[in-house]
Length: 384
Image (cartoon, rainbow, N blue to C red; front, side, top):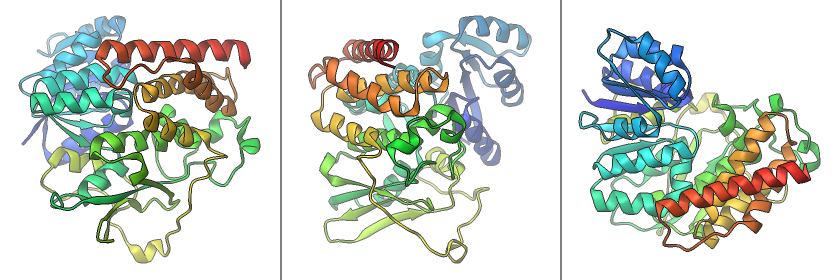
């Protein structure tokens, strides 16, 4: 029975991870949330973790009142997240936090030699070199949780002696697959959030609509699997049955298939290197009937093209891309800008923020992130 710390336990990935822990009988030793006091309090009473962490300090004060007498220690802020991520009892840390807030807890866990099941894209996108160098230096390990990256991870198990020729990174296409930029320029938020296959948080769902989510995953592939940009091919696969594939140098292609259910990806990350019976629906290829594949349209979905450009240029370009995108997506969700303005905002930041050097440090990552956000906010206030 493993002991798990779940960062972001009240979000989509976090709540599904708790479902998996119930199924497996795993012990949960830490849970965290931003402001959802009622949600985390209910989780704490059920799982009785050692730590319950609230990023928001006012919410932390409320949670202490809610959990008085339970013996659960309530921590707060970024320091609380890092303490939960590095606690000795945790055998595995699942980081499902949203945004750049996930960066320092990932570093804290890796510096403590932990295995980190990583569902926080921004960690590797913004600071991939620092994260992977820290894991090597401190004996930590990263296990991907995203359906695409766990598929690739599973395909290369036992293939350490063989060279990867191409990673085939699949994409559902999102709710606007087949649409033009003119058709989506003023797309309503409700339509952008109507993903045809996955039930996810708002930010990542909008990223799927712009294909920025696939761009972020493209960047993650570089750091997760040590490949070059030209070794990754993005393929739109609307049925989302093949979650990604790997072509080896002999021409053989290994793929991972399953019904689209994040619990399977989460469970594999938690049980690795073992497989256990799961609660997810078993795949029937005869029910699927057929699978289709298309190249992505980089003209109509420029966010994917910008992500590929950013990682190819190197340095802190991906960090700038990520920070500006976060600001733009949240502005769109607040109704401040149009759907089409998300890509224009990111483009402006990439063109105007100093990307620094390849040998970046944590302070430089944080400075570039803040500069990108400020640049994005300035563009939104004056151009849109």
